[in-house]
Length: 55
Image (cartoon, rainbow, N blue to C red):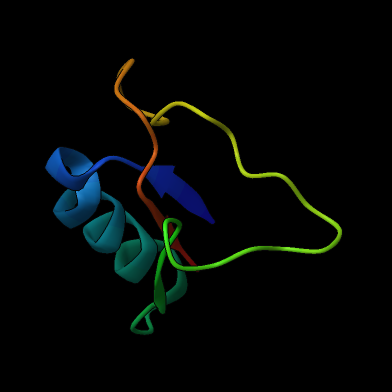
């Protein structure tokens, strides 16, 4: 699972495919709320706001 900004979305997808050998689901964090989990506020690769969840 990767939480990233738009700039690092392609990198996260590539890393997911390399690790799991399957296509990920990409969730737009602006359009989704989770009942039991709060996503990190910052991108895993930089200090920008997190925008996407790659799972």
